[in-house]
Figure 1: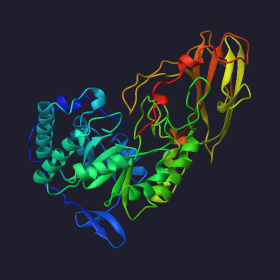
Figure 2: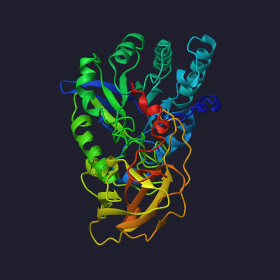
Figure 3: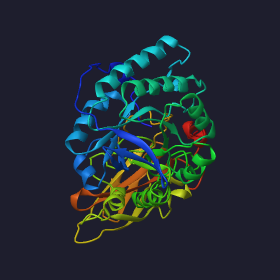
Length: 445
């Protein structure tokens, strides 16, 4: 989902021998597919992003993923210093961003830029695999993009015999599997970004005819396009405790559980970003604090929980109602929000509340969204388990957020959407139809 449209063209092309390459090979045994790195089996325990290095090492990750060349130098240097590897992204331009794959000159220019990049980085000892494109199939129509990806993959085969290739699709579709098999035969590993529908991947990738290995290139909570919505179109986000349970089950059952074909994964997002909300995909808070799902990743990858785990969320209500009840409040009226949480060990809980307007960005596929400004002066009598909310005077959709942190700032969180209506309580929002998210009405491919 993450991308940088301009990064490819802003990339400074410098060819240099960086070091001695570490050979990576895709292999198959009687038990299934696997990567061999430097002569040893290598299973990817990866994250999408390369920040927060101490926490990355703490949870037992061994690889990071980048999306564009603007991230390459820093990510490779960090990885080499800390004994990690990199799935190095080549940001193949998207039709939905205006790139025309019928423009042969533009396609050739893109290939030339990538050729110089491959020459520059192919011998870096931290390089694991080339990621050729991310979700180029999202809202596209011109299948010539797969010809371009094949040209890039074939170029890599000529320039770099030591590292395999992958390309990443938005979810898993039989059409894209067929197109990649037939139009891009130099792709070694199928990459899939998948969230709530991860459970169908092991069966479908076989049914759709992919014969080689695959990686789950992004995975995490339920996507904002996959969940229940309020009457005004606001998607209901899992709290951090629900997300933590999802990470553990999805990894155990569908990623590590498919040892025959799945050679690893990259959990998303190793960092924080505004996408629908400020907490939906980030594994860290806006302040850089580790969130509850990281405790589960540590258990999955190291077999132990931290000494002081993050708190967990038991419940959150506003005016005695849960989020799925489409809570409508009256402007200027005060209501109580209540929180139930659990914190283990001798930890003191620090609870923070905040109100933000609902985001109705129509961005899709992880395109940039601006951070939202908080609504000030509407909260009072803040306590660990409750707060008084005076509904904003301006009609519209909002969310109440709460964060609970313990030692090491390990944080649990939840949010609950509500609509402020100047009409009598209980009436339907007057502008509900206007507030429907355009992007959420489109089925993600």
